Amino acid sequence: MRVRDKAAVSALRTTLAALDNAEAAPVDEAGLRGVALEQSPVGAGATEAARRELSERDVVDVVRAEAAERLEAAAQLTAPAHADRAARLRAEAAVLLRFLDGPGTA
Image (cartoon, rainbow, N blue to C red; front, side, top):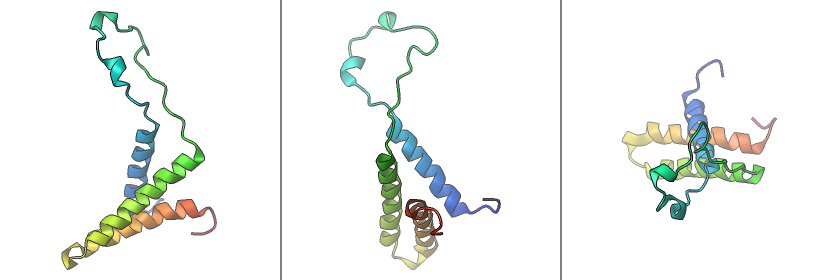
C-alpha cells in the first residue's frame, strides 16, 4: 500500500481493533467484587489475563460483520450531501470483502 488508500487504511485499522476487542478476555464481575487492594496479586504481569484465541471462523465472522456494518451505514446515508461518505463506506466494505474472497480475486 505504497500509495495511501484512505478507505483501505481506515477499514483495516478499525477491523484490526475489532479483532483485538474480540480477543479480549471476558470480565468476570463476580471476581471483581470483594477483592481488597491488599489481597490483589503483585509483581510484573500479575494482573495480565490470557487473551482468547480466535479461530479462523471467528476472524471471518468479525471481518464480515465489519463489512456489513459499513454497508448498512452506507445504505442509511441517502441524502445527496452524504454521497461521499456513503461511497467511502462502500469502498471500505469492498476492501474487507476482498480479503474474505481469497487471493487472486482482486
